Amino acid sequence: MKSIPLFLIGAMIGWGCQPKPEQPKPSAFRLTETISKGKELAVAKSEIVQTELLLNGKISLDEDKVSRVFPLAGGFVRELYVELGDYVKKGQVLAIIRSPEIAGFTREGVEAEAQLRVAEKNAQVAEDLFKTGNISEVELINARKELESARGEVERTRAVLDMYSAGKEAVYPIKSPVSGVIVQKNIALNMELRTEDISPVFVVGNLDEVWVMANVYESDIPNVKEGYEAEITTTSYANHVYKGKIDKVFNIIDAETKVLRARVTLPNPNFELKPEMFAQVRIHYNEPFRKMAIPSSAVIFDKSRYFVMVYKSDQDIETREVRIFKQHDNITYLDSGLQEGEQVMTRFQLLVYDALND
Image (cartoon, rainbow, N blue to C red; front, side, top):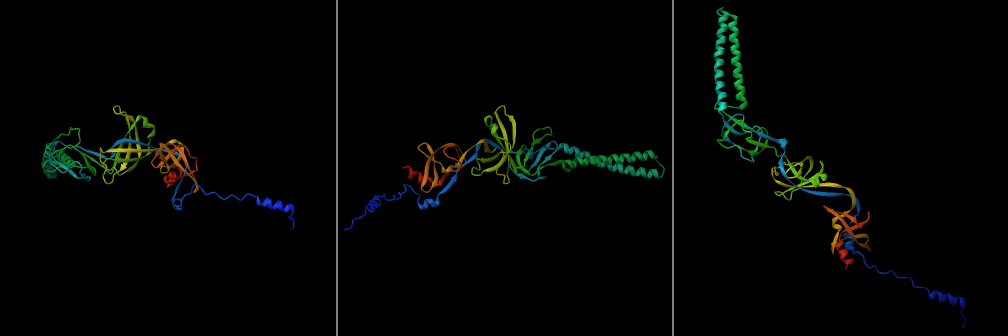
């Protein structure tokens, strides 16, 4: 039997003693194919913090589009054609007033017409007499002056009656000066009206646009500025959000209520919003600093703490505790816990959280 060289024996022993290559260890966690395909991610970003302020207020008439109607002359209400809340058009007759004052103007008109007829006859006679030399030129001139004076008086009385739109029955109509809604009515059938009364008989408001007058407390004044966007809801239309902007901040604090007023002008094409309705006003504004922002759907609340699932790969997902600064709409702003650019799960994160933290 042939002997094997020692160096070959050593080589064989060395080869036989080499460690076997390590087999890859099975991963402790991996997303299923369904969850992997259906997952949704969001990137943490540093953003300016948006804040919401809730104010109470009420719907008010646009005072720039309100007309107050007063009687032109004293009298009694003979006819009444409208009620509170009725829509009226410009020039529409609202009521008919029988007026002793108008009766006086009517009598003056009748007398003026009679005086004019007399003056016309006298002037014609004077013209004829002057041609035959029976009167002087001065008398003719006087007759002509009387005629002009009579014509002037007739024109004056007619102008007065036209101003009141009065007829022979000593009545005149009260007409609406604008199109709009009767928002105030201080008149009744057979009621006596006096021109010295300071209250209007009708108030007609154009409700195509309305004001929302919001109450701003002293602590909130720095956060309410003209141009800020506002969302308005009412009790009557709780599911309808009306959007507008603050167009006026009244820089006077009410001595009794201790609030300042801010105004939002809203379009109101269907007249849904009515004066004196209660309104809630949400003001959105930006804070002067930035925070890390993620969708609120990414946040998990468990055991009085907040967590997110930080995604690196299907096999590398970390449960990370975060500290919340505040939440606004669907955005959560963080004090700590995430770096800009890190990804968090916004779908299936609860399933993954339960799987990793059982």
